Image (tube, rainbow, N blue to C red; front, side, top):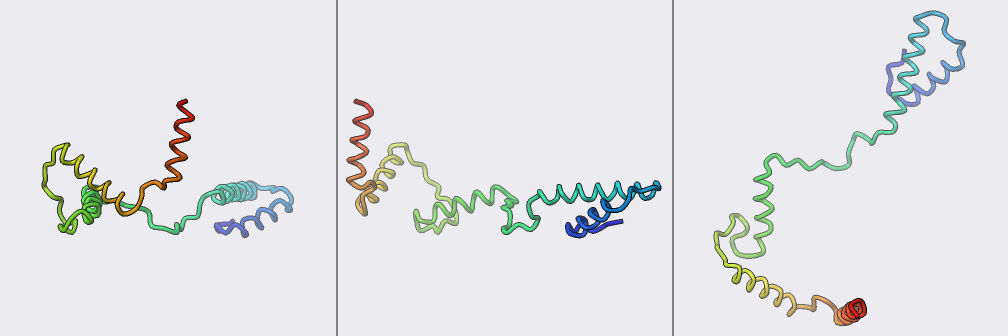
Length: 131
């Protein structure tokens, strides 16, 4: 009887069982059948991924808390509320659009969004495709 899950031990026992003459009694036959099953299971287990994962899986216990924390992280750079609670504000679509355009303009002032040579190539490519 082999009760070990060690691959090497199972492989050695299987090799020994193949070298021995065929079993003559029912007990030997059951033992041989069990050994073959263990060897087959070992092969299947060898194909499985390792059980000790190198990272901790993500577990979100309460999705609302996760959403609130992500919202706080997103709001932190926008103002002095430190991201702790959402601002209660009602903006019209025009106000929101103006705010977005102001944000884009401030980014453009710091550095060009697209390098000029890339923009020229893109414009040329677009012209060639539509021509």
